Image (tube, rainbow, N blue to C red; front, side, top):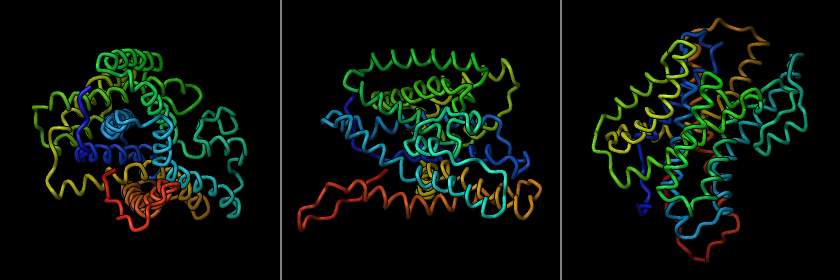
Length: 364
């Protein structure tokens, strides 16, 4: 394995991650925009999230694993990274139900204690109380279970994961992803009981492909330089494409996941935007996780409001207005909830010697 360099920012990857999060939101708010902002292939953004997760985890932790970081220390860091916003989103979603009942809305989901407990543990539920959804209170949360599964698997096998073994893992997981796509005729799977198993096929290939892209750009920096704005435009086009259902859809999903997205990630390591673009891309990447988790609970609150005061006709204006509102809430949550809580949790059990200087700020 190539020696990991000092940590740096990959601004273009941040920009792609922010764009992917925005397109996922449009997918989940079709009643608000009435189909005018429909993005037929935006569920493939999940492949990008898993891919970039593998890239970023390898970049951030390969050196630390080599220096002796253990599995449980890594698991603690990852849980601290993901849990504060996850719990905030879960709290909003759960509290929406008694709030709706107080507002006189009779038809609401039950508050099953067992499902709430499994949700608090970030585990899927197969109780069937809420239909087929495995994360009924906040459906997008399903990806976090699979991401942590891949994260922990990586940490457990890292010491044996030389480049040859990594290639074998990627090849084997590519077979799993291809089976998933062919079996379900799409990669839009993993979030309910009917195709939950498909989530494993999606995450393991994309995550370890991200690790592979990271090591590849270390050993052979990408010689092709394409404007990061063109990369964003290309990614946008891929995620809004409308291939026909059936064989066309199956082939499109497989090509994007197995070939196109890893190539995009590799190309993204070769170019960065200018100062203004860097600030925008960092903002998009920083808010993407909060926006991804919070938009569905916020949409649930808005839905209850419409149930009481009347439901307007869906329009592009209404959809864009909600996206702007959700992005603002996500920015506030990331800055004033997520960062302070993570800093506090990280500092627990680490008393500083009296008079020690403050730790410098680091990138995410």
